[in-house]
Length: 154
Image (cartoon, rainbow, N blue to C red; front, side):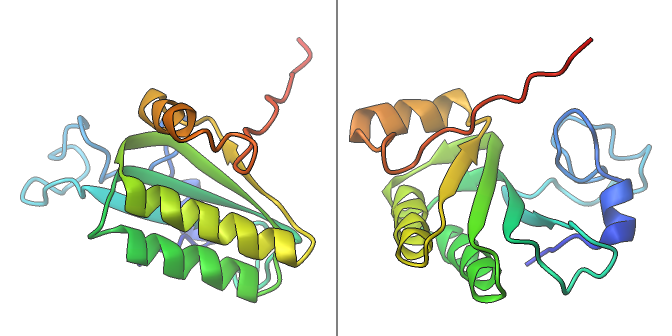
């Protein structure tokens, strides 16, 4: 499990929100990882404070790659840890998810139910088209709501 700390968060790409150096499509020689293939799955807790052990009432987690039977247990562990360490609400960024199967959706539903039982909520931030399609097919948008886009003033 890779969880970002403050120094790692600085190196994160503003475009894909996936750590630089393990993004698919990036020239790996440029970042010194020529022999390291990009991972097919990753999850990262975005730090809210200088102390990474402290979690705010609302945590942000970024997931990328393929969420399937092999990777969903890791996602369950990370999201459960976030709830167990004091966060009430979780915003899960799914923009870079390339694939999600029933096991991944099951984890999202399970974590959403746990958060609701504790007075919190899970919202999905910027889900990929693949995730949106699965949510539509399974009719889970009410249980797994999308975060309202934040409007920026120009």
